[in-house]
Structures are given as structure tokens and as C-alpha cells.
Image (cartoon, rainbow, N blue to C red; front, top):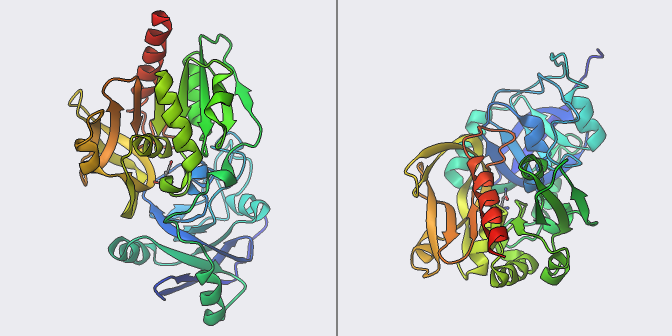
Length: 371
Ligand SMILES: NC(=O)CC[C@H](N)C(=O)O
């Protein structure tokens, strides 16, 4: 294996804080919103999750890259993060089934990153000060020049990003025996959500983020899935309009993460940006319907307003986060529509919450029998 030689790299935060380290991935410059993920494993799934588009990921696990990469461990067709910030970046990998190194993978994908920095100090800093933009460079050392480039990185608040990651063509994924048809509004869908539907006998047709409701309804689906995705849910107007129309026909609807936030918006409930998002694989959530707790995979920076939800006549809270009591799930009282803020498809993460896919399929079955 050839030895990789890293050059110096700089990470500059919006508040002027500077971290110096070594380069990883492609030599270059890249900016985005800095966010940290506390997961201990599953880096390739995280880096290819479209919800991270426009964000630079700080990993709190200290070693990244040591088990290489594999083509089937992706959540979309490409690497989506705008940069990686970590402590130890391993240029060598040891796993029998690995197909290559993370370094080569990033180099090919054009991902710029920085390693050998004190990620504990960095995470404490953004945990206290809140989410902020940053720029990483392994080619520019002049801080004034970097500051200028950083000021051009857009603010996540108010930013529409689904159009950058959604499919442009409608496509279909069919299990051997398909019993139900699920139309997917792709705001940045993760592959494992689609797999979970296929595993339960659902054929899925995936539509671009701005597909009008009538277009999807022409396929005559049994139900709708509103996917996860990057950016500010308040800036994703087309999806909110489609969801309002889906609610009118009263077909089963399931939303995950961005899809959950869009369902809230469609009911006139607002979302807001959190001081720090939830990103990791061990977030405790309580299901208020069953009283059971589950350990969940999470990745979000926005959240649904709990007070507005509590006072809404048609919607109720079904799940809450046990760390900070934020809303983690809701359902409509008189319509077959529900959603969660976290990731039951996990990948990576624990599988405590896959029962939600079963509950959706039960709704599909019930609504089929009604017709
Ligand atoms: N994973 C997601 O769907 C994230 C939703 C939204 N972009 C947020 O950050 O809250």
C-alpha cells in the first residue's frame, strides 16, 4: 500500500476560531455548516447520506477510515458531505471485504478534509456556541482570504437544498412480490428507507422533490412516503403543497426527518433551527403511545415547534426525545398520516425503530381493505 503524505490544513470557524491540522482527501478548499456526529461506526453511510449535503461533519469517534470502504455501504450515489473533520484519519484499512481506502474514496469524490485536530475541544466549542459555518483548506494559508471565502458560504437557516440531491428522473424499485405501491417524494432519500419498503412487499416509485401531487397520484399509489433531506424545511415549499394535497385524499402517509418537518408545515406548524442538532446513533426516544423507549439514529438541525403542535386540534405528539424533550414523532388524529424526526431506517444505527415501517404497511393494508 502506498504511503500517503499529508500537507498542512486549516479549519476556520465563522466566529474566527482557527484549528490547524493535516489534510485528508483531496487538496483544496471547502465550506459548509459544521456539525458533529457522535456515532462510533458507519462513517461511509453518514458521508453518503444526502441530508448532510452542505455540511462539514466532525466525527467524535477518534479513528476514521480504519475499515475502508465498500460499494454497498452507501446511502446514495455519491459522497454528500462538504468536508470531514476528525482526529485520527487512517490511510490504511483492515477489513477483508473492504474495497479501498477512505482516502482514495474521498480523493476520487473531491472531498476536502482536515485531521489531527483536537475534536473534543472543537465539539465543546460548537456545542456551547451553537451551529456555525466553517471553511477547511489545504491550499490557502492566508486567513483573510479564507475569511472572505467563508463569508460566501450560505447560512443553513432558510436554505433550500433538496433540489441539489433529489433524483431528476422518476425511478422504480420493486421487490419480487409487490403487494403495495408507495410513492416516494425524494427530498434526499436514503437507500435504506427504500430497502425497508421493498423488504415489506412495497414497490416504490421515487419522484423528484418538486413533483406536483397530480403527477404522483396518476400512478395510483396505495400510500406516500416523504423522505429525509438536507436544508431548511421552511424553504421547501413545493413539498409542503404536495403534502397538503395528499392529506386531502386521505391515503396513508409516512414522513421521516425532513418528511416529518414537512408534514408539520403542511399543518401550519412551524419548525426552527436548533442551537445544536442531533446527530448520532444513540439518541433515546420515548414512544408516548406504547410507553416504550427506543435508541435511535438521528441527523437533524431543525425541529418542529412543540407548543404549536400541542395546541393543534388535528395533530398529536407520539414520540419525544429523552435528552431534551424535543418532538420526535407525531400523527394526525383523523387521517392515516404519521412521521418521526429520527431515522428508523438507521444505517448506520440500532434497529429498535423499524416497527414504524411495519405500522405504515399495516395502514396500507387497512386502507386497501376499505376500498
Ligand atoms: N435528515 C434529515 O432529513 C434532516 C432534515 C433537515 N434538513 C434538518 O436538518 O433538520
